[in-house]
Amino acid sequence: DVKVTQSSRYLVKRTGEKVFLECVQDMDHENMFWYRQDPGLGLRLIYFSYDVKMKEKGDIPEGYSVSREKKERFSLILESASTNQTSMYLCASSLLSDNTEAFFGQGTRLTVV
Amino acid sequence: GENVEQHPSTLSVQEGDSAVIKCTYSDSASNYFPWYKQELGKRPQLIIDIRSNVGEKKDQRIAVTLNKTAKHFSLHITETQPEDSAVYFCAASNRGGSQGNLIFGKGTKLSVKP
Image: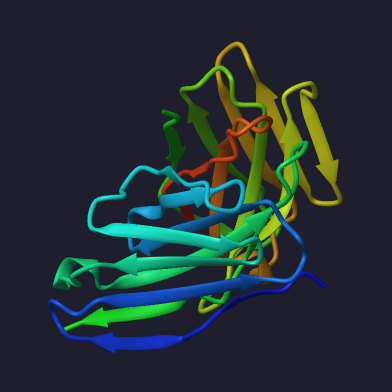
């Protein structure tokens, strides 16, 4: 079974804090994605990466950065957390070649107070 | 970049009826169209997908159709059951090379009433 694991299920942080969300996959997938999920807005792509040290902006990259130092790990960084970044964050991974399924992590519910 | 529109945002049907969810996409280079189901409190999971060289695909009670010319694709669920109640997301992707992005629609909340 493919496993995509996010480091925290729930997280509460203060405004202005630097926040790290970690995601690890165990299937040697090239692609990794970070989405945020908000009611009525669906899954919005923040960043994705197709290889180590490679990253591409998604639709809503402002206020976020990412790091992919190892193939299995993709980190989302909120440089200075703000209340409008309170959301559910979902990580996903997939193979790069051909068209294949993306597997999601269980999600991290981040609350910024 | 790619933009995916999904309709309707909510859909309520009686058990045994059919449900249809429609999506349009903007990037003619997109070549992969998956559908995900997300039950309450759970992660999205793939239920069916279609590639751009295929017009229709079926898997038991679920089918997906693709019209490349019009840039739209649809999910059809027949003989709906209460366990089909969930949020459904369509997505579009241009796979190949470095373009691995996967863009989702806003989702459709399907309620199947017993």
